[in-house]
Length: 224
Image 1: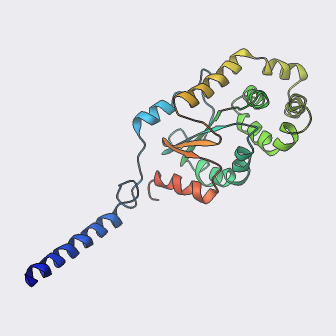
Image 2 (image 1 turned 30 degrees about the vertical axis):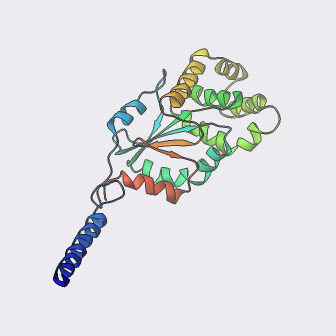
Image 3 (image 1 turned 135 degrees about the vertical axis):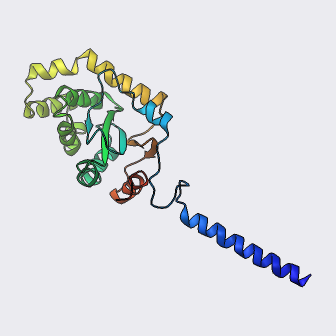
């Protein structure tokens, strides 16, 4: 009897060691340590469907990681992320070809809608520059005075005439695009708050600090 107990203990100990070895070898996604996690192809395919006017993207189209961000230009959490975390993400991962980044409109109010329409009107080459300015100057244009007049002042600084600004915010095609992107984000992808991100299909919510967002990115990047 005592011998049987001893054998069970030895066998149990060996099993525990085996479990620990396996757990140590696997990462949190069940992949071997050092290997990149893979995207769910169905989710990735659904996310790749752009609005009627298409997406504007930063980074290489061949990057191993694609991030879709749903943001509102009057969201202070979105502004905080873009001022505090995004510059380092852009320098370290987007500009080095590791991450492709797409910002999609998810406006919560008319001012945010007009602002993202203005960015869209600026053209693909200036879209992200306009977004940068709008996030940086958010307290001045979104929360003080008349947002429409404030946006027009920013537009003029960016080379728009008063006529071009008015034409932009009355552009029904761009408005329909923004509305379509937001509706699909909500109904298909379950976006309820901003900023919301999809990193190779994995949903991440909130204005994460750089270090925390980097942890998510690294799960999908091959070991360098």
